[in-house]
Image 1 (cartoon, rainbow, N blue to C red):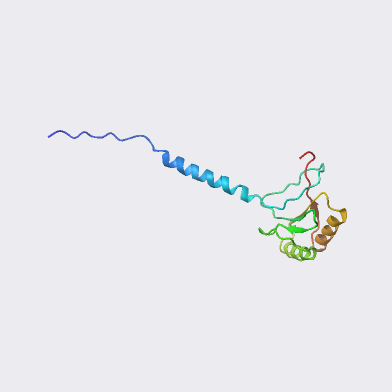
Image 2 (image 1 turned 60 degrees about the vertical axis):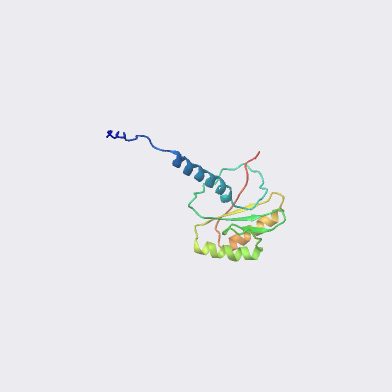
Amino acid sequence: MAKAERRKPMSQINVVPYIDVMLVLLVIFMVTAPLLNQGIEVDLPDATSGPIKVDENEPSLVVSVKADSTYYMNVGNDEEAVPLNAIGERAAKIIAANPDIKVLVEGDESLPYGVVINLMNVLQAAGAARVGLITEPPGS
């Protein structure tokens, strides 16, 4: 009878499964990252101004106005047009539930001045103490 040779313990780690998991996670993040970018496509006017300090955890209400004078609110994931009087009602409910919410207006640069002012009046009547305007820096 021959003596059975003893096997030495292997001191290497098989990293192939870890690489597979990493690549799957990379693909998942690459696919989901563009989906997280939400909003309405609006051609913002250029203006030189300081950026607003917005905390990611601090809630904000953004009302957008497209070039054809249709209004949109960023409540949830819906991107349907909302009439101006409905914006006042919805904003009043949101502001009543959270009085410290920042209210921002995003208007297309081709809009008449009065459309944005009417929207700001509706938002102030709904209870927004301060309404901010969103612009793009010059040259962007």
